[in-house]
Image (tube, rainbow, N blue to C red; front, side):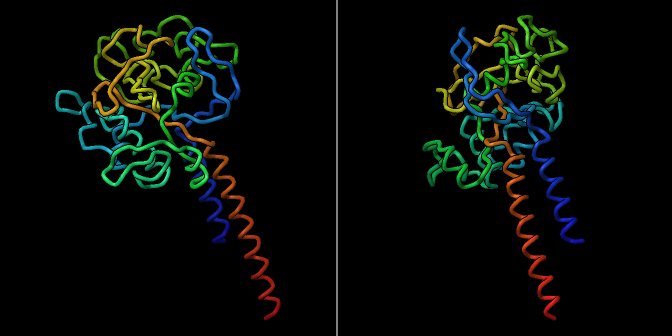
Length: 277
């Protein structure tokens, strides 16, 4: 009975691990001929929404100023996107998701907390599944690659037409405040807020952010728009989302398979001992 409940709990954990992630398939797709971005040679998962204040705060990766959307004049709540987050703080959050430690994962930091280099491959070897900031190609594909694999769209809604102010959070709605993540239109690949709300960090693209924010107009939501920011910059209009490589479900199922094999062996040993007795 204990074994049964252990297996059920792990299956439930597997489901929870996937709940906030969407799969981006069609591995080996060509890049967008208009921009040169979007080619990714593997299947991966990306968080359906931006990382929230509550999620980021739990990691201890920040310095306490990421709760900007609840400053007394605004009260969006803990599920608003974390902002005022530097690229390096976002990396530490990804490490925390991977290993439970902000210093261990795909991103290597020195003893003083300074960023040194990225090594996804060795982290996958160590941890099985890693969480990371999306590369610009990964982010671009998740936002603009059409769900029917027929090419790329200008906006993440799968069309060349800008979303309305109720579908995406940018200056068209006159709000100029982030909203709770996932409040707008579900985009073509199952994501939310890749159009507006807050700009999002790319992994090591010279400080590039994409996607627009609640302050700016629809031009920033377009596929060809790239905005530069200093990697140490903490801005109320910049947040992030994460990718998982390889897919967590696969890694967890490998783990479940290993546990299952161990349990089978354990039961066989126990049965033999009972027969011997």
